[in-house]
Length: 145
Image (cartoon, rainbow, N blue to C red; front, side):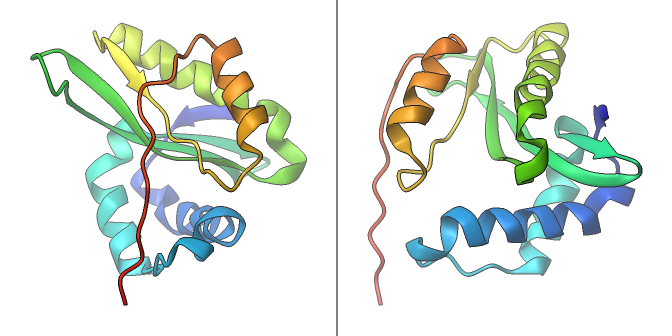
């Protein structure tokens, strides 16, 4: 199992992981999955994203980008996707720790992570708390037709 920075060569395999993530978590929110948009996102974020690879196959992805804090000039790492295929989920924390270490090296002051409301929220909230996170805000989505 290897954890490494994402490369441009990973884009197609990363799209497949996001499709899995979409099927597991996003489809009920009215999100339309567009491969072109995903490739555009990866083109902007691959330098700040990390993959989990086993025997040449991508089995996990933590994609994020660096943005500014809303109240200060401090940099913040904002997670966009964190998904690991079912058989490899035990490596998800190692993938996160890799990104966390990268943030420390690059002077990032804070990491924000998303938690899908439809994905065993109580367990995920406890997981994030054990990892050292504290709740900050909740987002709500309204689908407009």
